[in-house]
Image (cartoon, rainbow, N blue to C red; front, side, top):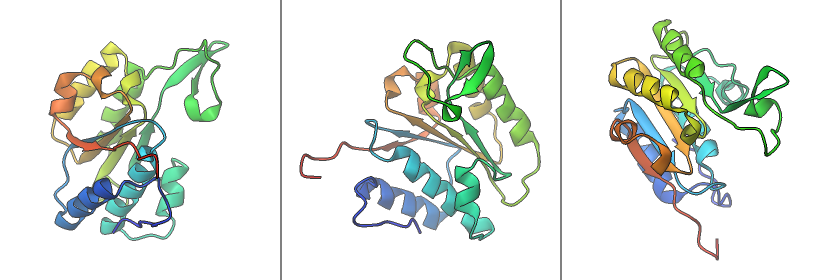
Length: 186
């Protein structure tokens, strides 16, 4: 199950129980939207959830490292990009300045189709994690919607702190996992 550290305030107990229930039943939805305020552990929880899904099919002690390094064959990480000196840069490659507009582009979403078309290597499922899904531009949002409508062996996890910026039709095709703000005491 999900490795919950009691001293770690970044993991929301209610969310953790919900995800554990999903893992026990092994009835995975086509898509999940992890939403809530920034800085409360959505990405950390998503990585842990992905690790647990993969462990159900092929236990491996290096899965977590491979996922975090974006080096697991059945995992695809999509994150906002921006242009710098004519080159497309992923957010994780360097920190953009405030005047750079970060966007998830249609080419990145089209790559999902190619990724899902390939046979799974180490797992029965392929997983796509889209960080800051609210940065999808209009054409990328429509392309993602079409992919979500087609049945695949893929699981989509979208992370966002601004769910209101996602298309209603994308939201309706995903299971919502709400991360609540922490109390002042926490």
